[in-house]
Image 1 (cartoon, rainbow, N blue to C red):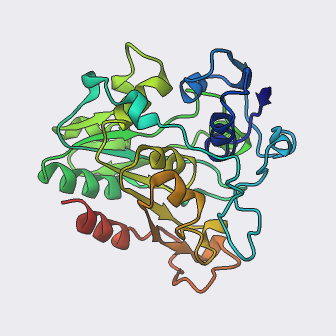
Image 2: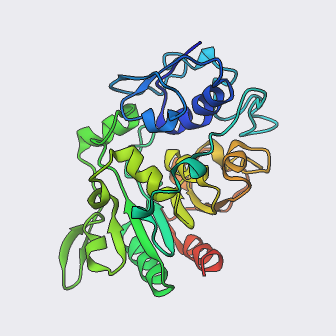
Length: 305
């Protein structure tokens, strides 16, 4: 049996890896995108053949799987609910947890992104002020923080990420007394906050983050592939949702893939941006044209003590 797909990163983690793991006794070969071998540690023949990903599900090979769309088999009635008949999440935490070089006493892993999102400007991200507030609170509570925001050169990317590279998008701000800095500069101004890239040394990118995540206590992430990855480690995940099909009622219900991946530990925080959402599903709508992280920061303080 050969499993061959190259969809978006988060889609692969939801639709391909649980299918391949469920059928691990039958699977002889997995053909995937470059850098993905650590996610298929149980297979002896993993071929990283794809240099790019696609948001076209058919072109990505998903029609060969029981689930070919991440938003569910009946998205109108049960959004986010899949066919789980051949679906088993690999025990990543159990496999990667013994790497003590990344075992910090109390750890929060914050993932971020800054990408073109289906043709419009980014909103599903944390800006520098939000990151400053999170870093300050978490370090005051005695946590180490690992901060990751890829620049889309670390691994094969999809069409949305390609658009971000072409436009040269970056998260920057003028900080009083410091000057103009990037979000990736900000960790250096905090004791106990680590830029993920600085930790990639002995192991490859994905193996390093999986070893760190296996020893993480809490995750914070914008909704998307980063949240899916964060949900694999059986620890609470706070996800910031600004748009998309994830706004549908009960998308984060107990039978959704988010909760199945995370063992019922995924906590959505909604900041529904009016200018990019034609349908808002009765959520309170943010009409300011910019992100409002107030509720997110409140949830972080309530959940992470």
